[in-house]
Image 1: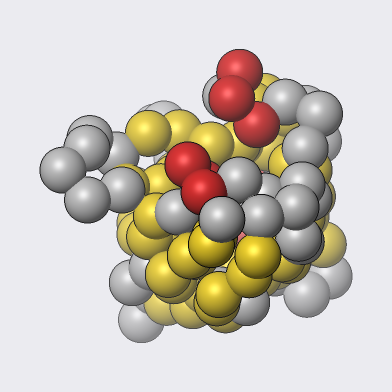
Image 2: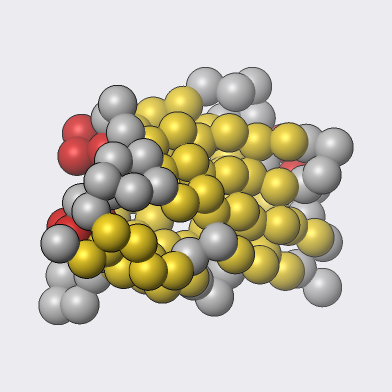
Length: 117
């Protein structure tokens, strides 16, 4: 059974920090591309950051320099360190795992991040 379980969301003031975690099970984690997406009310879901199996990363322009994605293959966990948070970062953040041609496309249930001004 595949599970992606996010944690670490919450309410924080503008300028604060949060660290999201996504613990995966039931997938070949070490070969998966892991991503964090977010969806704010009334908006489309967008990619925040992704990390490949080899450690390469990419970020949305809006979070570059503030967010850092990392992975620990020994713990089957991907992290999103979010610094200098802004009210516009408020959204439900979801974890995704995929690797085209080698595994399916899986999603976690999401965790709420709310940044107050």
